[in-house]
Length: 166
Image (cartoon, rainbow, N blue to C red):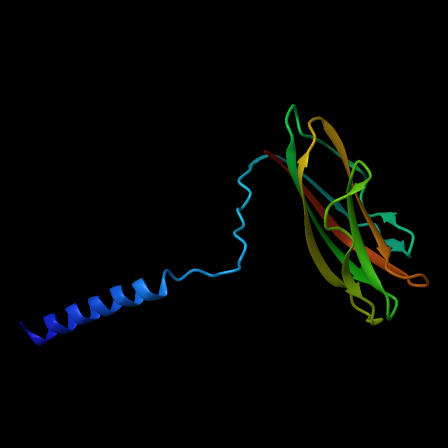
């Protein structure tokens, strides 16, 4: 038996022994998450260039958008991109997304902390709502400030709403 063949067999035996004693290389205590497998049905897009000033009272960032789930439930992904500027120092601008007046599961993201800078920042945030009931729904997006006494402005902003079949 040649030396290289002997080393290959020993290496194979060590590998088999290591797997036998240690078990498979699996993360213990980690939750297995299955990705959503959906089919895109329709995309709604909108862009606004008018300046919006807001405070701790929510104001519409875009006109309401009506979507259709059809005769089955659907999933909706909402993406908002916006410039924010003149955010009051020590306060935070937020984005709220709702379907028929009900907030998405994770909404109210803090998107821009105020440091009174003279230039705008661009923020993009995405939101997901699954199992929206069959039929039509109205999607709204509002901006507000986290605390009283603060103000901010939003400039050019884009909205993309994607409707997916279950």
